[in-house]
Length: 195
Image (cartoon, rainbow, N blue to C red):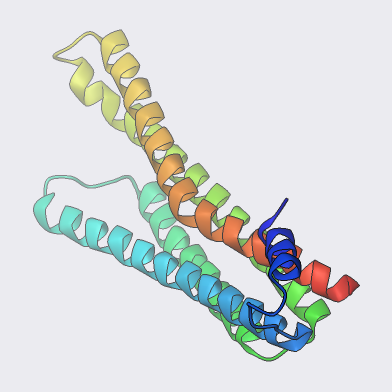
């Protein structure tokens, strides 16, 4: 039994003890909540972009001896462009969902936002994994001169898996919770649509 059904049962049991809300008022509350969730998705993606940009700047300042291969630098710039595109899409979706739309349009906006967030998370996990594997392949030889090469690659693989799992759980914690709330709103809005 979901929250809306429990609320309906409580209303029926207690008569007029609870205020009654019209379909329009419930829609307005769900609309505002959905807009707030999408705003948080936008804010978190901007903060994430800023975090990676700061990491890149700090690395370039303190890693003067470190010079990545040209293809990794190009990949880095492409990655920033792709992240800016995702942030722009999040902003456009935020503007769309903030506007007063009929229930059907709001439902479609929620579906679109969920798809974009899933693509965003998958893209980030892939690019992070690719960057770590590339770094291991390129710079693993530098460490293998002093240590056994098999040990270097084994440690590198374990490190990559640990970082991947950690980032996956961070994304799941941040974006997963927001998408779950958005999905709950979607289900409630579908009930309104069916009434």
